Length: 340
Image (cartoon, rainbow, N blue to C red; front, side, top):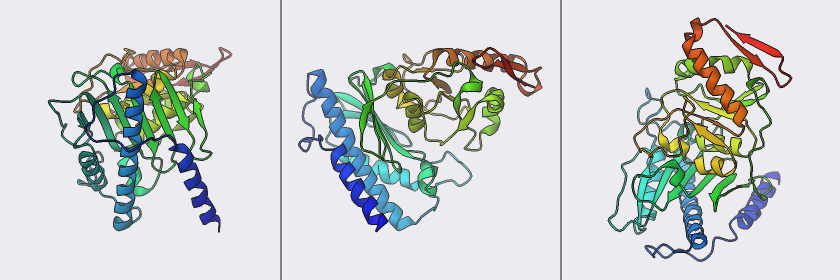
């Protein structure tokens, strides 16, 4: 009875959540001219595409079984999964008549001479989690009115949906929104981090994918002093956590993160957050490279971001693990940790 009730409740929330989808899209129609209609077009497209991807992934999982890894190369933790290809096939078919350039993680880009916009997609952000049925793998979609040389600041729309939580995050019209998969409630989100220093911070530190050694080379002191440490290995969801204040800072320093891991950048930016490289330089004007790698720090608190950049640089200058140690102070300016 409980399972039936949950299913019924979810269907109710699903109908509420997508009540404003609008009329079915007409393939290859012209992109609307007005900013409001353009964003609505992007939103409708993202929602419908997300539903197609989810349906295909669920059917595939019913056939492949629970907890079965679908990696193409079992020795390479970052290799493509069979489930990725399932999603990619759906995307290519669904968008084949759309006048857009398509940039996909784990697949070649598709460019059209008549493209009016670009869509960038990570079909499953967290493929390992999807296979294992852990964490909150998600679908991450971003769009830009530009068709080439797209910078992160050029992304005018973003859509992230948790495949397990059913949480939805969007960036549209300069604002960011969160729709809870639990309650169905929709709210505008703003960064609300009050943590000015790492000993007070909830930090997303990412040691997975057999790349812990690289992460520790830059971030080891933070593992020792952070108030709390989280890591789900789903970048878009984790950036959204920072955007809505569920986490204070996220650090990716493993030299293995591609640019698709930052498709939720507009969600954090609109919410008042910051994303910089490991030297503290803003990434907004960096051109998105489908094959590129980019380490980054994301935070909803400028003081905390400044501390993280400074301490990381000190840690590297002192020789990392062989250094003399680093001081941290709490919000009362008392020294609380000294990492050696």
